Image (cartoon, each protein chain N blue to C red):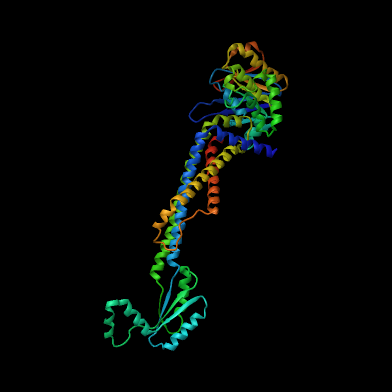
Length: 219
Length: 296
């Protein structure tokens, strides 16, 4: 599903952020991407959803070399990738339902279809009763649930999560992660970046370690 | 699908305008002011050109005949020219020319009594029936100069050259100044809209994150810009019309020098052009403003 071959990412004047990364993630797999701050986890995720291009090396997603995808083709690739961020990235002037439905709007779905599918996703994350609320009225955990619902609403084949529990109270962590495991159980390939070693110890999954841009272990 | 996506984007553009009334108002007024300046300038140019045309529109050509030409030959020549059909012709024989000079000299007229012979030649005065542009007048004068018995042609060549040069200068200056005004308006609008776009950069980021194409991201901003442009142009049209109604009657008196030249009026075609210019300025301004946010 995801393959990286000797991927390197550098910025002028700085040491490589990612250095010779070769990695394979199979379809339906769940992996932890771990390492200290500045290890290159977020950059790796940004490369996967084409927010940046590698300086060298190849990245294949679903067999497609994303380095060869034109700027015009990037949005269509992103429609198959759900992304969840530490800071949720919700629109404050839209309701919870509208935020979740946003990913369907760009696909050209009808209003009725958007409402129906967004409600179903909200129901799955346990927030159907908050559909008409604005995000700022929700707790951090609830906002992250909305972000996950938005990332999954168009049933992407890949879900990328960058420190999804980083801003949350530890008591909420498990419920958020459970949503990611549920998505994985439905067949979605999930890559979660975290520096929280406690999570890796509690939830045993394949773990890829990065340090100073290098892949240091894959277990 | 296209219809409901278009409807959704239009609705979003309208909602965005409504949700940010102050920036929208600033954009509308900026466009309105720029277009008002542009429109006033263009109307002023039209008036100046009409003024120049009116000054050069009633030219006359005088053919001075050879002193050896007899009166009968002079009249025959006049008749021949009259036969063209596009000019009024008047033959002035030598005694009549002298008499006219005597009248023109007024009190000094009797000084001519001392002349032993009439120094003035007979002439043919020609006035085109339709207003003629300077190049056509030159061609006509050159044709008439070739006629037998004609010694010299006079048609205010220097004055005509100056008018032409003035017209050319006015056109060049007008085009340059108009481009400058529109360019400045475009930049101001682009920057105003850029502020509005900047305020919504998070929304753009999220739209791109969930797979929106650049066109989908850009469309509501372009619609919003075009709508602001049309509203701004509406403001400009309103102000110009109000100025025409309230101020022009007074200003017209100042145009008394341009006898026969009416005060500038904003015609429906001008208003339509202004609205189209407003939409274009808003559209292009938005395009420029959004472009930099679509690079990531």
